[in-house]
Every structure is written in C-alpha cells, then in structure tokens.
Length: 232
Image 1 (cartoon, rainbow, N blue to C red):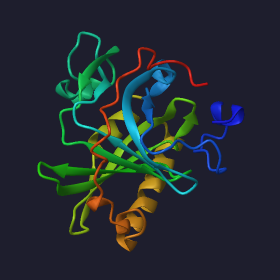
Image 2 (tube, rainbow, N blue to C red):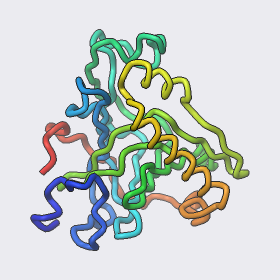
Image 3 (cartoon, rainbow, N blue to C red):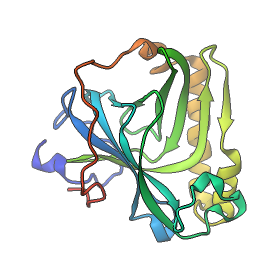
C-alpha cells in the first residue's frame, strides 16, 4: 500500500481510489471498535481474515473455521449474550480470544456502504443465509479495516425473504446512550436502503457468492500479538 493509503481515512469511507489494494490470499484484520464514549477508541472485536477480492468495487474476505478471534466479554468473563439485556451495556467490558467454531463466514463490503453482507453455510457447504450487518463504513489502514457495529441487522433467506434482527438490542443501546438520536436515524435509513437492495435483489445477492469456495491451499490466519494497535 502507498503511504497515503496506510493512513486512516479521514472521511470514514473505504478507500476507493484504485490503489493500495490487498492481493487474494493476504491476511488482514477485520475489526470493530466499541460503542459509546467509554469504549469508542477500543477494539473489542478483531477477526483475522483472508482476502478473497479487493478492488474499487468490493472487499471480500473469508473467516475460516478455527480462526482465533477477539470477542467482547464482561469484565468478570461472562459472555455478553448471557447478561440480561437491561444491564448488558452498562457493565464494564473486557476481551477474550476464542476460536471461531462455525463453518466459516464470507464477508462482502462495498466502498462507502454503511453495512457489510455476510454469507453463512451449514456443514457440507449447504447455503444457510445472508446477514446484513449495519455498521459504519469501514476505515482502511495498513493492517485491515475498522468499523463500528450499529446493533441492528437483517437476515436474508435463500428464498429471498428477510427479517430484522436484534431490534431489542438496538432499542436498548439507545436507552443506554450508546446510540444517540442522530445516529439512530442514520442507522434506520441505512436499514431501509439495505431492504430496498434486498427486495430489488441487487448486488451482492444476485452475484452467486453462495457458490463460492475458499482456496484449499489457504491457511488459517493467526491473530497478531498487536491486534489492538492504532491504525497506521
């Protein structure tokens, strides 16, 4: 990457100038920073992934089964999803490294879009569903991309039916001050635009990614010791 593209982009959008792209097979980090004033500068999710495609139109990465990933937990080690929703976002947080035991995830992100589209499979490469993760447009840096999750998501079935996910978490995040009114409106608007894309069956849903398979020669990425380093 060039010196300019090494720097974190000021506009919060994915780099789309046609330079500094990663080659297929390279390992990078897909990270999310915390929500709210207390955690916004801290990385609480870091996933080593393999680049499938990276160009001005699309960033596609593969998170392989067995990948060591950083995940958020409560300070006492309790898994976040096991804490009641009413107090989930109010308790101190920490992180823990665990392996991804699922069948793997293909993540697709187009420059500037406030969401990424994830593909899941069942064992035996039976396609399960698409998942639209509403988030900040990714900020590129030398080691990968950074974003911030916006709680609200959309699940899309193979028959093209869809449904909202985590509406309760989105509401609680607003109650607890992690999502203010302005951001909530932006997230809802992004969700409406994503639904319109789904109903039109636009890219990437129409592009046949459910038939994609990883290169068998690819190795499972390792988690860098400095996974939480500042973007440069």
